[in-house]
Amino acid sequence: MRRLQRGRERERTVAANAEGFQDPPAEVLAAAAAASWLLASPARLHIMWVLAQGESDVSHLAARVGGALPAVSQHLSRLRRAGLVRSRRDGRRQVYYVDDPEIVTVIHVMFGQLAARSAETLLHPGSRPAYASG
Image 1 (tube, rainbow, N blue to C red):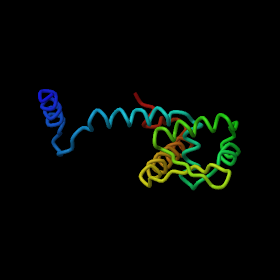
Image 2: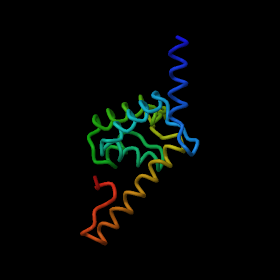
Image 3: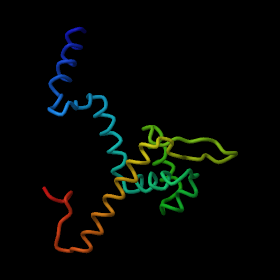
Image 4: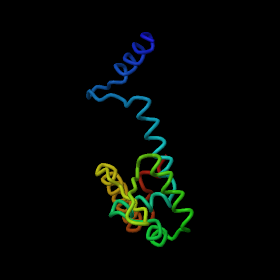
């Protein structure tokens, strides 16, 4: 057990770069990858965008994102299990919301950056967005 702990400490030390930042631990990388996978769905991204604006119940979300009620409910269940969305009971309705201001910030920044890149591409049709290079 000690050997494993020393190995992890050594890995963290080696991961430190010149600026003093360390690479995130494997557990954090795994959680980020799982959240990224969940947000790879346009429907779930749309739901997160709507919930970043304020709380909503399933029927309003379904109408807003143009999805079937069962599908939106399934997406919400996955987002809730991942800790990206929370819910509370309001009478007979289940109301969903994003209560982490940092997640809301990430959503706003991501959409803002992509919208700006999209607008730039529309202004200069021959150019490729930076994320499309490879």
